[in-house]
Length: 431
Image 1 (cartoon, rainbow, N blue to C red):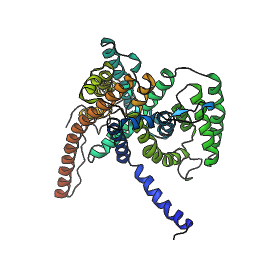
Image 2: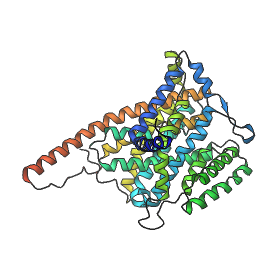
Image 3: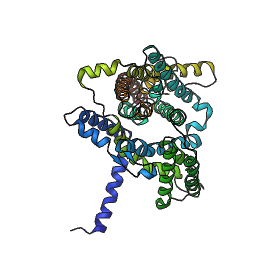
Image 4: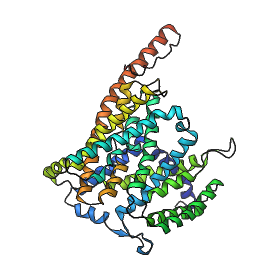
């Protein structure tokens, strides 16, 4: 029989291998999809009562305002991990990434703003005409980083690298806007004392990480306390995750001192976010009982679901593409020379995959388990699926075009022995 020490030693390489797998974009997106499908199947099976019972079971301490259902723990607790990683990524991009250069980042930042504004306007217009609920205006504004990057990773064998950079920058800014929207528009009641008290653990956490302290027995209790106090204040608890992520320093203290602390934390927490937090949230958020064909038709014809679907599919595509064109046309900012406008159009479609944060905003707007929330889920799932399919169709065609260009260039190099200058398509002139 193996000793505990040997077993422990053998388990660490396996744990590291699993963590490395979970850091892959395609794996994270696949787990998200599996969780959502599993929830839909269970919620529409003869055993659907078991799903509802599990989701609505209360766990926690009522005196600490933490007597929450399992579904709320997933939305308020586990998603804080997702937003902590998002906060780390946001700060890294602003301090040392693409968002540091204002000129380079102007186009995708503007595209993100347009991709938030137009879906919201379309949702409001449809629900104002159809006598729907305007409170859900922000649901179709979010782009799901995990899903969008996973789809791009699957189909992008020859697409320009600039396409992924554009999508990543756009999605990061989109996350920042979603955080602001949640904090400002979906805080129902504000309790000042818990919010002020949250400054203490948040400040201590900031002080420790600024001194490059990595001791989890110090940092985790402070992070949990900050999260609990923000939750008690009425501000959505995921905002605490973002603030904790922003507190972590990005740059190394001295050159050659290893990775920055933000990069270190992101490396550690991304597998937990991608492999546990987001899939578990998706499992408890996506389980809508459709009620057969009649129920599906009823849900899809509700102005709320129509507004969400149209906002994700048409709003994101129009908002991102139009804003990108306007900024490139009327300012000094320009589209990356490696991208054609048809590529931007496909990327804009991809931005319509709005799963995780859209479902969260739907719960905040209408209340988890309500009839309107069920229709939100149908709209989000439908819109995200249609956007993913349309984007995949177009970008696969573009991928074949770039592959042929690469093969032709390689044959020319082999024939004359002199490398040709690879000409990327000129913006505005699709290949």
